[in-house]
Length: 64
Image: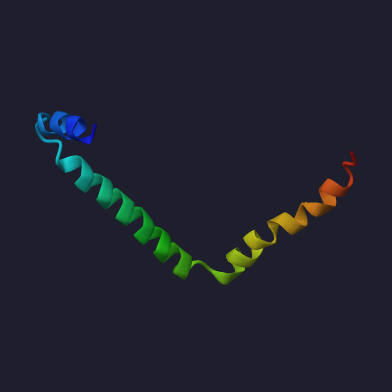
């Protein structure tokens, strides 16, 4: 089955650019995410990490 797919892909002109574009998008996304994680402010991280604990007050009023 792989030979069929490879043979079909070889017949399409210019298809070799798509894996390169996919790799560049993947690498760029994770590089930017890596930079954001290390440059994020500690106060923002603490605020966001406490969001699940802040909602416990609201959830306790909804009893099953």
